[in-house]
Image 1 (tube, each protein chain N blue to C red):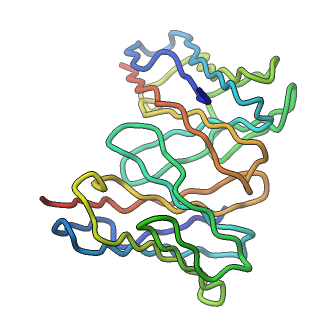
Image 2 (image 1 turned 180 degrees about the horizontal axis):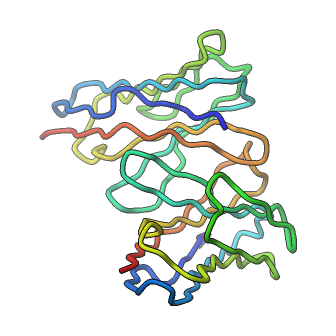
Length: 113
Length: 109
């Protein structure tokens, strides 16, 4: 089954404790991205990747890091989480960036205390 | 960066009625997409309309695009309780999609 998986689905952590949210897709997509969703603000892109070892900032990259060492995986790293990073996070992938259907993961609900 | 803005923010209708949601955007686009999100879940792609298309159908969905007005509409006909969800438009902006804040649709049975 074609899918994007994210782990963990729910996470409660404390300020400053490094965490990683994993994202994996099995569709051989070149393009992957991370979004955060906050009430009233819709989805905002954090980082995206056009292919292995090619990543770029989206609209709200501050406080986040990503890596793309393999085509299927695109982890999101919060080196020192803060309460304003409490949000619902989605990973997405597609064959090409913006002219193709984006396939979304199920989401990771992160709470930073 | 540009952003699609949906209107209305929320819509409540009876089962069987039609639901219309609108999206406006600011700059020229190559395509516009509509997505649906059930509460707290990932977005699901509904339909993509290219800038040279004016109307597109998919089942009970009808999407129109007016590039001169920089607007699009999503019509869901004969709505069902299962259509209750948030609906987002997304426009292309270089190498990314930019999403609006969404319309919350509630279909009452």
